[in-house]
Length: 286
Image (cartoon, rainbow, N blue to C red; front, top):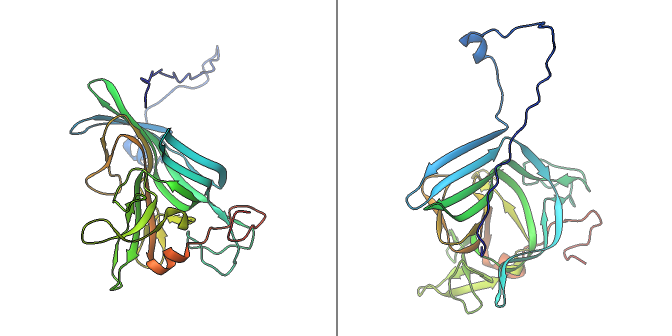
């Protein structure tokens, strides 16, 4: 972010109709009556003091199901490339096989939509000494498929790969030279003893990913850690799914939790793209 942010307070105006004749009056209710009332706040505001930053999070008490397509998502670009570059981006998908159990645990008819689900979206600001250090957009809960051709990726891509012994280990991101990085990565795979790539494939082999958490019983639950951040400096964002923090370096940072565990052969062959258009274009886009 190269420009200072300007903040404007947006007032919420409440219009109250008034009658010249009082037809009723407000009366207090008991604790027992109050306990029987249920509701959800339309918006909540939380302030948290971190080690280096003060955080303000605004959360909307809404949830949504969506399916969308975009020609591309490019963020944090300069002459040398982009922090995030995903072509043919999509959330959610259409069903090809009505016998397949989908990511939400349900089966659907062919041509029906399996939506991307988001619960309680939020915007969080990080400040230091009265200056904006960064902000992030996220979802308190998210589950669904994300598709695209990832040419450049900055952030965390939480995916596991079975090693040679069949043990699931965390996949690592690498640049074109095979050096481990989470900034403008182009490859994913397993690291060797020296920390560089031993077995890698281009990120473009991952055409669709299941966003969520592996419940361990074959089902996929909601993740609490999906967010997109923009930082002027390194920021330690609160990990909403557990203790600790998720460090976002300067620039654009996408925290992408998946429920997937793959083997290298599957990665090398390529993960098929979900059907993201009503007119089924097969395994490719066109």
